[in-house]
Length: 81
Image 1 (cartoon, rainbow, N blue to C red):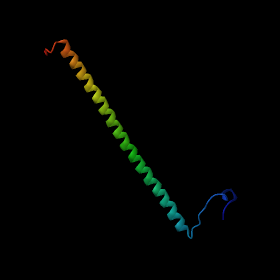
Image 2 (cartoon, rainbow, N blue to C red):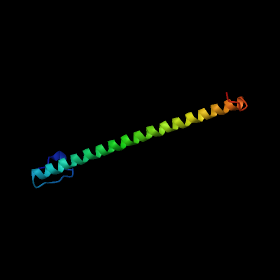
Image 3 (cartoon, rainbow, N blue to C red):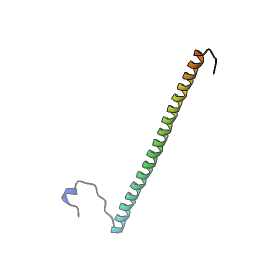
Image 4 (cartoon, helix red, strand yellow):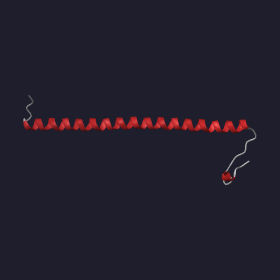
C-alpha cells in the first residue's frame, strides 16, 4: 500500500519484513563505516597539515638564525667572540 504523498517516489517491495530490515540495517551500517572512514581521513589530513606547518615554521626560523648569524659575522669582520 502506497500513500498518495509517496506515489511519485521510487520504492522497492520486499518479500518479507526480515528482508526489508536486513537491507535497511545493511545500509545504515555501510553509512556508519563510510563516516568513520571519512573521519579517519580527515584526521590524517589534519595531522599532515600540522606537520607541514611546523616544518615551514622551523624552516623560516632556521633562515632567520642563518641571516642573523651572517650579519653578525659581517659586522665583526669574521671575528667570532
